[in-house]
Image (tube, rainbow, N blue to C red; front, side):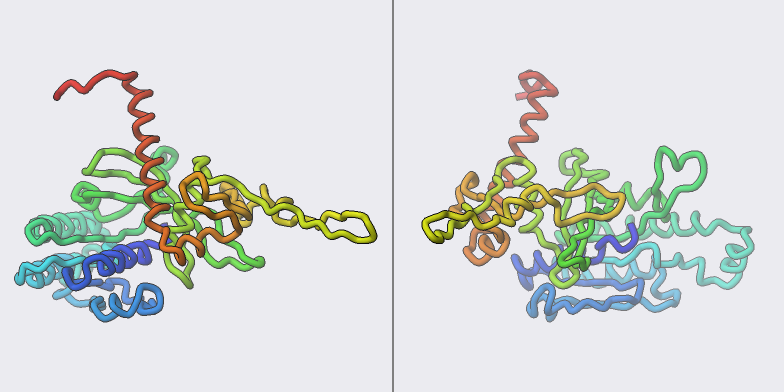
Length: 336
């Protein structure tokens, strides 16, 4: 969807790869929208900012869909793995559209614009993907969903342009939509993103997950992991014991605001599903000795992020195995 965080997600993928593998990859960002304005050093670090190459795409035939394909292939001649992001495929134009006569025909409705783009995209993938595979590279291409019109809209309300090759050639295809806003002191500081796997050549599974994007921070995967463990019952709600203040031989209980707000969501958006957030967290069930209000800061400062991720993986794998058990009822694999 529009304004959901597609570009941030793609850049975070590059930045995470840079964090793990450094100069083992070249990092290319093709800015077809000519709208790149991120403070890369602040959001993803100085190292990644120095290695990232942002290329604005001008409006000329050399940078058509077919022209970009040839330029990407040429950049791979050194055989070095590259992490390429194209933002977005919707802004790229087929070479035929730069021809004056063809452009006039398209404008007059005598020639199919959609057909020209679809053919150009097929050429792009047939040209680029073999080199991506040969060099051990990554390619992320972004596209924006549009509202479907007519009778079919009730069954498939959102579609994308550019032909079927965009989905057919994807190893993993994600559809993103906006979830509830994240509100702090009545100000929107970010929003949750709902990601649905439409296709995965790895395992064929279609799953849905949520993660938050905060413009001043980026993708907050620690928050996403902890919230999911809360939903799965692996992290428990917690509230401090009420303080007791003796006065003139009597004991008075101080109001425990955390306990009162235990079931109130601090993230909401009109007309959208509410996401319940705790004000206190007990991490001891996942092996972390912490009870408090800010587990995100604690696990990051204590170097325990990997332990949280391990807990997520263990629970996710257990859920997947439970699905298999329920589906097949203990039946053994046909092949050993």
